[in-house]
Amino acid sequence: MYYRRARVQGATYFFTVNLADRSSDALVRNIGALRESMASVKATHPFSLVAMVVLPDHLHTIWRLPENDANYSVRWSLLKAGFSRRIEKTESIAPSRALKRERGLWQRRFWEHQIKDEDDLARHIDYIHYNPVKHGWSDSPVAWPHTTLHGYIARGLLPENWGGCGGDESVERGKR
Image 1 (cartoon, rainbow, N blue to C red):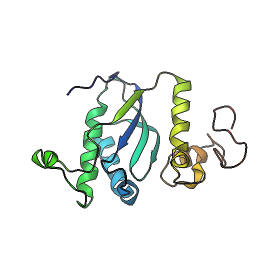
Image 2: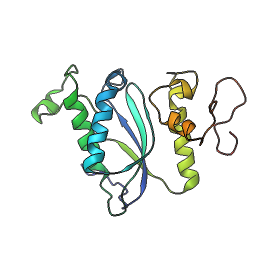
Image 3: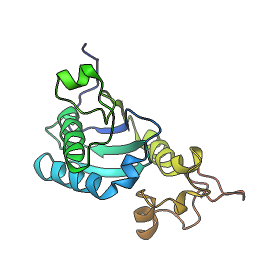
C-alpha cells in the first residue's frame, strides 16, 4: 500500500514513531543503541535534529533535511534497522513479519507532518518537550532525561523551569 506523504527537499518535519508493543520500554532501556543508530544514520544521510523526546514506547522528533534532499523514509528505515540490530531479540514476531525476515519491534509506519512556519515549529517543539508530562512519565518536562529540552535550557533558549508543574507557568511561546 502506498501512503501519500509530503516530500519537500530541505523541509522540516515532525515525526512520531512507535514500537509495535506499546507496553514496551525498549527505547529508554536501550537509549544508547538508539543514539548510536541515530549518529550512524546522520553520518551517511545528514539532517539537523531540531528537537526530540524519547519515551519508553515511542518517540517524537523534528528533523530539518538538507537543501536537496526529501528522503526521510530511508533515514527512518536505517534508524529502525540499526537500532533493532543493536539490541537483543526479546519481542514476539508475527508469522507475517517472520516470512519477511522482519523483527516485531517497530510499527511498520510512522507519522510525519511538514512544518509550515515558525509558529508551527514552535508549537511542535513545545509538544515534544512537554510530552513526558502528558503521558505521565514525569512531573515536569525538565525531569525527563531523554529530551532535547536540556539543550534548549543550556543554550538559554528556554528557562530552567519551562513547563513546570503546578504553578502558572505557560508552555506557550512568548509566555515563558
